[in-house]
Length: 443
Image (cartoon, rainbow, N blue to C red; front, side, top):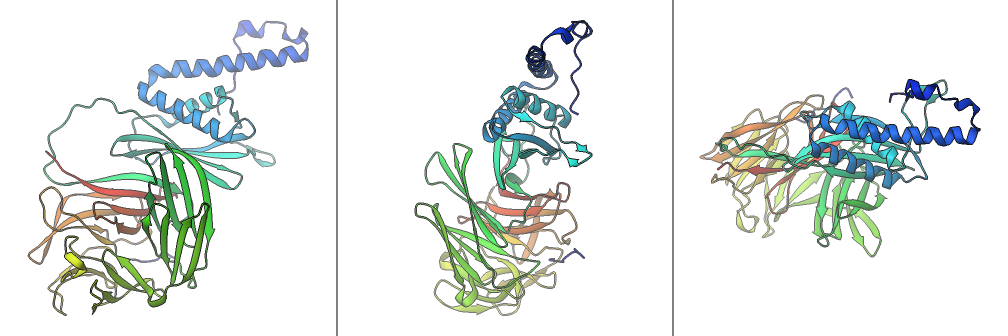
């Protein structure tokens, strides 16, 4: 249910032999040159000594991430690494080693590192703050750095090459898979990806009061623009949805407003009141109640026929229903019950213990109609997504639930119903994270 909460790096010490050298007799300039020389040797020594302690792919990834950080911040700015976290909750790596390795390599690459420490006048200031996290997707682990510089945020990613794993027994049931694609400190309502060509990718991130567009070229961020808008309605439980006409045309639906974003050639956003308050979902439209942030129950089918249901937070119908004329609907109601309709005004069944976010996916692994369902906790608790199979007016859980370290805030299906977009608030890190959910099948 949607329930609101009462809402050292070490100091280099030269060897004893070096300390006995009469450096005090050298001119000041030579002392500085020697210091820089020794510091460079120590930085390279740390990197070389650390390599045998961890698998080579992790060393390579840490080096790659450091190179990208140094390249992004450049020698013109100072930087500090403010945090190193494991959002995958199981990476086989020591976070202190990761911090030291990235710091060492960043310095070797010319980065002007400032240690994050407290002094008599407060925190040591740096031009750029870097947050490093270890994440995981279906292809393996990722090292991600969020760089905040001059009021803008950039993301750089270094994948960890997969190591050979002895395959286990085939999965006996469909398996939910999660791929983290974005994380940030500000709330996220929805996100969507577009690819204008094979080397360029556009990411659109919808927040309660703005739409951000990011452009990547072969994985490196080259552009970030933001467009603010007025919601007409304010709410602590803001909801929003993004749809793509094509990679360069995006529409945002949020709090009684429709905003159309276009690249021409820069990114522009035109917003206006959403007359009729209809949000598209597949080939049908749902009537949204912006004053309450749920749907009123009126659903307009593709033939223009309007059918009425009880108010709901989200709904699902079989994706293979042609023309949006589905007679079977599951509605996540306002009272904690999910109601199953089969063409009659009265529900044929009720499902209990479900959360307020549900989506349909195309059948996978030989199963029939399948639905992803969030947990029934509030916004102060961890959450989960469970896959259900629908048939004979019953819902049967399939496989194990996928656990999340925080509440799920939104869950929307992709345009082709092959995957789902999920946003949740990580209670461990405080970050808002966006992921793609899909179904994997065993052999």
